[in-house]
Amino acid sequence: MLVWHNNGPWKHTILYRDPIQHDFPKPHHDLLEQFIDYEVPEAKFSELAAYDGSVIAERTKGEISARCDKEEMNFLALNLANDIVTGRRSVQDARQFYAKTAMAFMMGKKSPYTQGLVFGVRRTTNDPDRPMVPPPPTAAEIVAMWPQPAQEVANTTIAKYGQPNEFTPSMLVWNNNGPWKRTIVYRDELRHDFPKPHRDLLEQFIDYRVPPGQFSPLAAYDGSVIAERTKGEVSARCDKEEMNFLALNLANDIVTGKRSIEDARQFYTQTAMAFMKGEKPPYTQGLQFDVLKGSTADPDQPMMK
Image 1 (cartoon, rainbow, N blue to C red):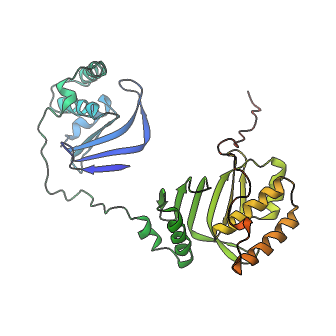
Image 2 (cartoon, helix red, strand yellow):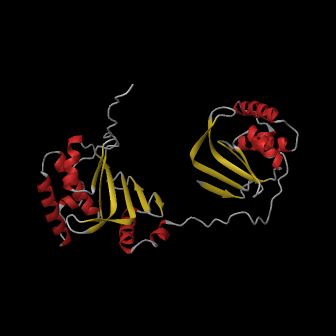
C-alpha cells in the first residue's frame, strides 16, 4: 500500500495493491480509501452499512472512510453518508442519488457532491487513539538484523544487482535481475551437505521445462535444485551465485542426456574445488545454455468435466 497523511481534505489516503470486489452501484474494484475525522452516532452505524458497505465508520478513532476506485466517488459516498447521519436523506434515497450521480459523472457531468466535501470537517489536533506508525524499515536495516552469513550473501547480491524489488523481514527478492527470472536471499539458512557442508541462502530461478521423467534424476543429483512443472521453473539454492550457475548447467546436462547423475555429481565436486582455489571454470561463470523465457509452463491436462 501507499499512504498519505493530511493530504488535501483527507486525514489519510491509502492506495491498496490488492483490489476488493464491490458491486454497488455497478461492479468495480475498490482500491482507494480516504478518511476524515467524523463522529457517527451509534444508532447510525447500521444505516451507513445498509447504504454502502465501502463506507466504514470507526467509533473509537472518530473516523469515517470511503473506499472506491476514484476520489470523486469517495467525495460522493461521504457527502451522502453525512446526509444520512444528519437526517437529510434516507438510506434508499442516498443509494438512488449515488447511482444517478455516478452515472452522470461517467457521462462527464460534475455534481458538487463529486467535487469535494460539502460539509465542514472538524480536524482534531490531538488524537490519543491514533497510532503512531514508524516508517517501514529499509532493506539495509532489515539485513543489519540478520545473522552474519546471510548479511554477507545479501550485501554481495545488493552490490551486484542493486536494491531488491521486494523485501520482508526474512527475505530479499529481485525480479528479472541479470540472467535470472527471480533471485531470493533468505535470512534463515538451510543446511546442505553436498558437495561439502554449507548453508543454502541464495535461490535463483529460470524458466525451464523439466520433463516429468527427469524430476527424479534431478532430485538424486542435487536436492537444492528444485523443479516446478506447472510454472515451468527450475531453481538452484546455495550460498554463492557461481555455485547456482554450476548446479543449473549440470541440471541441464542431465535433462538433455549429456551426463549421468553420478557424472554430474563428480563434475560438480571437482569444479567447486577448482573454484575454491581461485579458478573460474565456465560452468561457474554463467548459464551455458539458452533460457526460453515465458514458454516453459506446463498446466497439465484436465481429467474432469
